[in-house]
Amino acid sequence: MTSSWKTRLGGLLLIFSSMAASGHGGHAGPGEGTPPKQPYFKGIRGDYRADEARWWKGNTHTHTWWSDGDSPPETAAAWYREHGYQFLVLSDHNRMQAGAIARGNLALHYSQWYPIEDEARAAALAIYREHFGPDWVEERVVDGVTQVRLKALDEFRGLFEAPGEFTFVPGEEITDRFESHPIHVNAVNIQDPIAPRGGETPTAIIQNTLNAVLDHGLRSGREVLAHLNHPNFRYALTVEDLVPLRYRTGEGFFELYNGHHGVENYGDGEHPGIERMWDILLAKRIAEGDGTIPYGIANDDAHRFTTWRVGKDSNPGRGWVMVRARRLTPDSIVAAMKRGDFYASTGVTLGRLERRGDTLALAVDPEPGVDYTIEFIGTRRGAELGAHPREPAPDGRASQRYDDAIGVVLKTVRGTEARYVARGDELYVRARVTSTQPHPNPFRAGDVTMAWTQPLVVAAPQGRTP
Image (cartoon, rainbow, N blue to C red):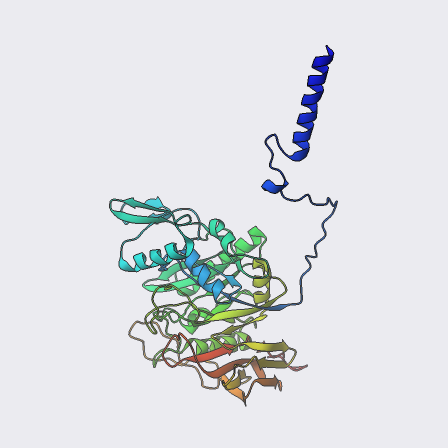
């Protein structure tokens, strides 16, 4: 090789090495998007241990375009996140937010495309476009009808979830019926949809559904729960349907408040209210059964995010649960609920809640200018628990009559703090807090904000049995 070629080759090598060092030759330099070089560590440096347990606000009963809600799931999720909720279950009927939806009557077809066929859907689409933008909303027109592609939970959860701030808990409303009566059970933290199981009686339908959810938890290795929804929806269920159910404490959950405008939370002359049903269930299962109890929850059962009418629309924000857990993860939230470490609310916040031994104590986190009444409610041993026949209801479904000694007020405190120490003759005691604050979007006109604790089952004194 001549000296001139050696000189040229050396120059080329110098140029190439210079380009590589400066980031040229197909690679961006430090000023062109290359992230700064990070030090290399052989291990992790963060602290991912759980903090002390705290309260998390969530709703476990919500509907979207994936079933009979009036809005896409992103709109629903945005509402809850922007209004201070930390977890949310999108519980559409007999499906989760994935796959395709079967449409049609005689000839079914499957699609992820949702038709905009009326003014209400058009209004929801306008909100969707405005808040999520044309790059997100996928539309097409088929035979003159605008269609929107429904996004799966795994597609949109990244828009909302953040550690310690907000998480989705997967779920489904398993929707069944006995004759013409709706029987709905929410499955929470399931990984795949669970089909309705059916049954020859209302009790059998609920039991078969509960068993399917619990079996799913065993097979998936996850914390799951099932809660019975709106027993007074069209007066579908009676106390007598619910007393025989078989479950352990922490496996049975019961909506004692549901914000859907079609649910008869307060009952009528022929049907007990849902809270009254809860007291009868508690008393009979403790005194006559195996002692296992259902926990009471509140939900809004939201379907409507575009129209807001008291008594006509099932809107978000009417009821929720406050769960005490160390981590904001689906399994941590569900495990805490199975321990009974939560309370139900329609607007009252508790700053302190203790339920242990023979004592139930709580303190309200008060709002300025609002008064509070705390009632301790329970049933004493020896109360008459037998059912008394009532005249058949027009629809043929009504609970029997029960003695007024079930679910009586044991103590009343007007203020923000109260404590009840059981004297030993109670089957259980629970607390209900009623405020003077009108509910901002009530289930019924005139409703005020409230809260309900889980019951404290009073152990029998030594030497006695319940």
